[in-house]
Length: 267
Image (cartoon, rainbow, N blue to C red; front, side, top):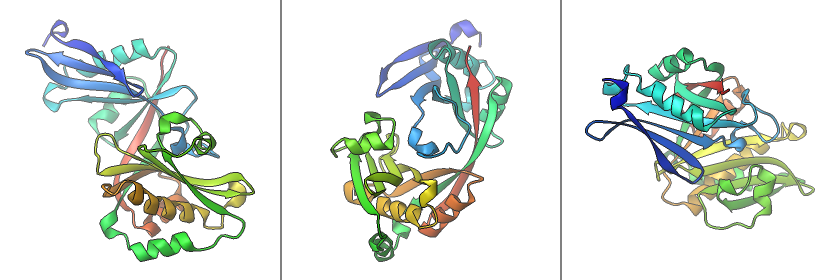
């Protein structure tokens, strides 16, 4: 198919997302691309788990299998590049997939790998979970917040907002009024039965006290109370973060898949 028969159409922005569609005759959508703000809470409040630079945006690009190898992905990437000048694109793709080959071919730099884990509420022993939450941690106070992640770019900012109905739930541990640990989950807009978790993250000086386990258990319990329709929680972790992976296994998360992260600096 000649490129002139492929139309790249910008879809009106909503909720901070810019989206494009590749439309081919007779009006079939053969591919899509979108840009989303990188969620800062995923990469740690206190340290950056992956080498993602400031000003980065997350790229999601997909071409229907029957329309691949016709330049559609390249055309979508070109449209994204015109929109996101002087920004850095972050793409997460399945290891060994066509998406990874696309990233390599277009000059993306590999920056890390992630393990995706899934927790089903049907596998959670509620009494055991409640015991984890109720264990005392002298000198620390557990707090919760609900709302939307678009309200702020830092966890402290979220906590300064009053709780209100929203897609996100935050559980945090504080000591002397300072935030020392947190875990966040947000309902996935594409799948109303699944939430995506970020963290837990614990300040270095407060590690070794099971605060990560505490806030994560509290988040799992609180999320189901606020969003009772949620059946699953998906979390992704840098594959070399063995401590966090072990914590997830302890809570009942099971391995789902492995992905690789690529980054491209736009001129």
